[in-house]
Image 1 (cartoon, rainbow, N blue to C red):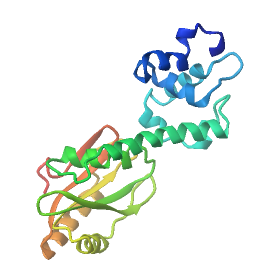
Image 2 (spheres, rainbow, N blue to C red):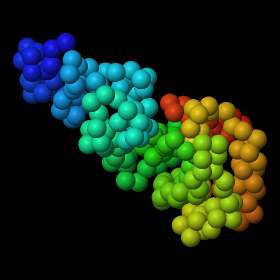
Image 3 (cartoon, one colour):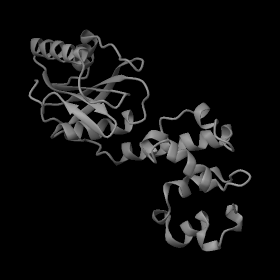
Length: 226
């Protein structure tokens, strides 16, 4: 197979980007520009096509890969693996920057969108607390716990402490399921009940508990369980 240098100029990723803009290139071609070169018999584009195919042709899935996992591919050394991981994280940072400085929560979909840059690449479970004012505008968020793939424990007292210190009048819990399964577990149900009861006792509105599951989510509020 020809290397990129042997391709017609109009087919080379860098030249195509300059001529037609980045939007004209595929994900594999854009990543190929970053890694710079392929291996004997395979161009950088071929290498990235293989890697993307193994990750469902999804940048979200690719973003979950570690440097060590990427280095298992022929032609991907530490420097190239780091470059790929950094590129995926830059995409997450862009999503964060695109969020309004004073985001207003109108639905569970807004909660999902708020946490997507934080949670979409996680391979372990994390639980975050979203702090809101009376008008449902975001005051900030706090990482409550981080655990393994099976779950992360949450101390409801710690949740209340952060809510009170942050002067939040409304709060939301959001945690991810690394498995991609959005249905809540019994532990999730128990946590939701305890959190709602604790908030009621101190006059804080418990708005929702959202489970982040890759490209989907589960909302306790939307499902009538709050």
